[in-house]
Amino acid sequence: LFWASHIQTLNGRSFRDRPTADVVLVVDSSETGWGALAVRGGSVVWTGAGAFPSDFLGTSSHAREILGLALAIRKAEEEMGISGHRIVVHMDNQGAVASTESKSTSGRASLSALAFLWGITLEHDIDIQPQWCPRDEGWIPAADRLSKGRQIGLEHLRPIPQSLPPPD
Image 1 (cartoon, rainbow, N blue to C red):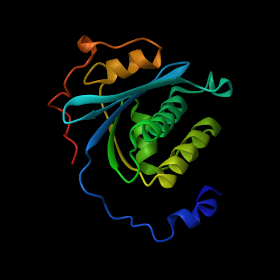
Image 2 (cartoon, rainbow, N blue to C red; image 1 turned 90 degrees about the vertical axis):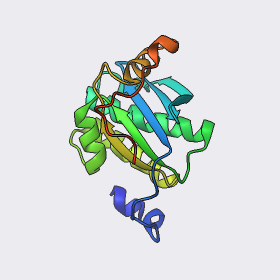
Image 3 (cartoon, rainbow, N blue to C red; image 1 turned 180 degrees about the vertical axis):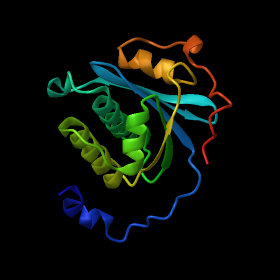
Image 4 (cartoon, rainbow, N blue to C red; image 1 turned 30 degrees about the vertical axis):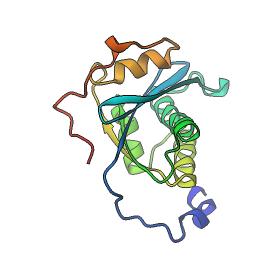
C-alpha cells in the first residue's frame, strides 16, 4: 500500500547514489521523546528534540528509534532545509539501522514509523545512509540527553570515533 500510494513521487526519480553526504544527523530516542543534532565539518550546526505522540508511548525501542529519526528529519528540514541532500545518520539501535537500510520491518508500530520516515524522505528528496554507532561514543550521548529533555554542553560533544567510517 505504501509504494502504491507513493508511485507518483517515485516516478522519474533517480535511484543512483548521490554525491557525498555533507551532514551527519545523530539521533537517539528515549521512552518519551527523541533528540538529534546535525554535524557539518566537525561542528554541531543544529539541535532538535521533541516528545512522541501519546499513542506511541510504550512501543518498542526499535519503533521509537525509527519514529525519532523521522521526526528529526522533518524538524531538520523545517529548520535548516535539507531537501535534496544525502545525509549520514548515526543511531545506536542496530535493528533500527537494519530496518532503515532494508526499508522493511515487522510489528505495527515499527511499520507505521518506517512508512512515515520514507514518506518524509520521498517528499523532501532526502537520501539517508544509516550507520550504527555505539551508545557511548561520538555524539550519541548528546542526542540521548536531548531525547530526555536535557540540555547539552561542550562536554557532551565528543568527536566521532576513528573506528567508524567517515561519511562518503
